[in-house]
Length: 175
Image (tube, rainbow, N blue to C red; front, side):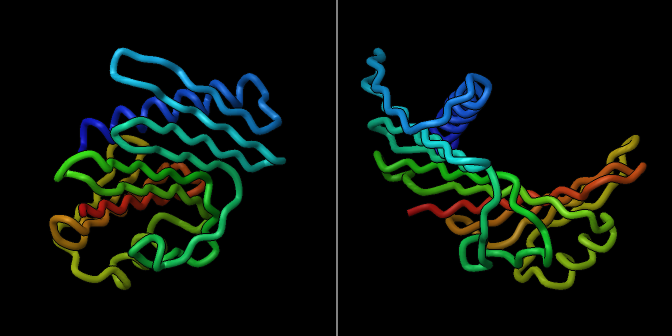
């Protein structure tokens, strides 16, 4: 699932970037013929919000940008209070025994790295691995929670010189 999800992710991000650079302002759907089968790309944009869906016989990928509301149930991890969702994506594979869904959410807050790190260190359950380090002007922390088939990866990044703190939560659920 990892290789196919990665391909769908890259394709989806490419289409998203191309669409927004071109200034798509309406709903569009295009189907492409490839050696591996057909690929359907659907784009929708309204104001600050945009959605790109890429569908193949292997599964689908959906990328959303703009303001969004998310819940702990969707993330499988606590939502940092006051954090704003920058973008999210869902990548699914339905073809074989390795099928499942990987979802990722990118959030941002003006709170300090240390405050966000303390929140997740206190509130995450079933932490299997964690790390916290500073490299150059970048602080990074990562927590891995859950078990194979139902995992979460929480990454926190910020510059030591200040600015926003970014939180990326990836949820991988295998079927």
